[in-house]
Length: 342
View: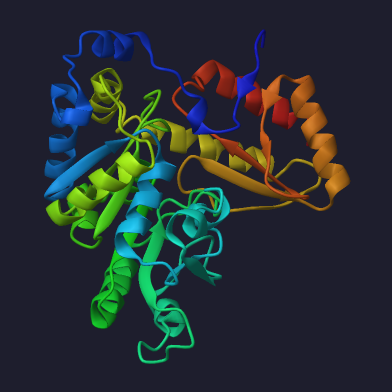
């Protein structure tokens, strides 16, 4: 390979020529005044897909998640999530900084929690010594869980628990497009179960920037104000929204190829010297663990020498993420490079 093969994340994708052409031809206006026709088109498209009243375009998934948390909680409240959750690990402490909320953490199965675990974590509403439980947040697919997908039946059970106790449920769906492809589920399946849903366009779908929060009209009005406070209002953002539209219409089904490549990599990786465990691969993320840190570092050195970029998760774990810019030629090269380490 003359250049590095980048498997650090699916966020490294760049728009292809067709997406760029679509962006350049977008009709735009001032979205802060809700006068950008392409942003409006994207938001209406998402409403139709998920069966929700409203959707709001955001610069990032983190801002969309933080807005949802702010909508559903008050300072001093507590939300329930898995200990692998992106909102807890990778959003700069925004849960506490932006909303004054703490997290009650569950050790689930590769980032997936169960309804009975949620119910056990709910604080009694009349016990004023403990934080008020006001939100459950789910991540699908799970990043730190190696791209694991929720079973829709379990999500229905969690929804039932939330309804029983009268508080909302948020879905961090940064890679929900991958989950839907892997589980043959539909956006409307999730729209029925969650009060708010964030989705990202700059990962598997290949757009350069952008996420959205899908919700009720009432929550949309709140989100619009919070987005403003967080500095998320953009002007002629239709150029970016056009990339999201193109990604949904043209790249969504192609995620199957990313999943195939990830599974093929995992079958070779398990034979590499020193690899003791690989998380089951369901989508496009491969997390694998070495017997010790020295073996992990030796593997990274070999990958760097082969011009293959990967990322470390902790002292013994590494991660590879397949994506639309990781082509078949690169895939064969990586497979052959890994075979040399058997």
